[in-house]
Amino acid sequence: MTLDLALAFAAYAFVTTITPGPNNTMLLASGVNHGFVRSVPHLIGVSLGFAFLFLAVGGGIGAVLVAVPALHRALTAIGVAYLLWLAWKIARSGPAEGDIAAEPPLTFLQAAAFQWVNPKAWVMATGAAATYLPAPLHLVDLAALTAGYALVGAPCIAAWTGFGVALRRLLTDRRAATLFNWAMAAALVASLVPLVRNLAG
Image (cartoon, rainbow, N blue to C red):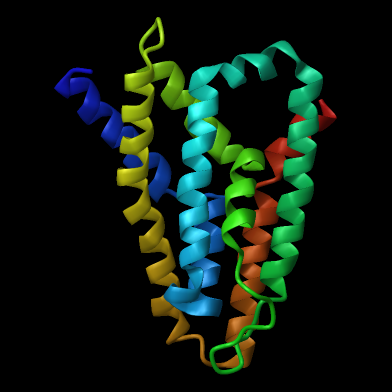
């Protein structure tokens, strides 16, 4: 991979991981409700879960979904159901009583598994694979892009968690904390509108 292509990929990885989406919304809420340290398994789950997803997409699983539309619809339906469940968990997460929120933070495995039904993660992975992976595929390039995505993305998602920790100091009022959690849950539900339209179509 040339330096110009590597820099272009780094910019793509930065933009796609720093912008709002289901992962960043949930990490922001986790920072508010659980603090940074208790959100670390969630952070690692997002990073490693996406890395495995990108490896799979780069290795050809994306072509399978295109070839089998029913499988793609089933995955989308599972994603919608899982996001609704996560939105409900966020809505019930707080406000925290001392350092303990009403709902526990997302675990490493839950966060990693979520990447496979996260619509933004699939768009990120397929877009990067189609644009930056050479043809024919070389495993060294796939591994390098996967590592690069992790290196660029980890600080971005950690920043969202840190922003949540900063907000935690402001949301000391029970009413304000409850409104924040419901707003984050509503943001997740709103992200489902395009998916539901695709399923209906």
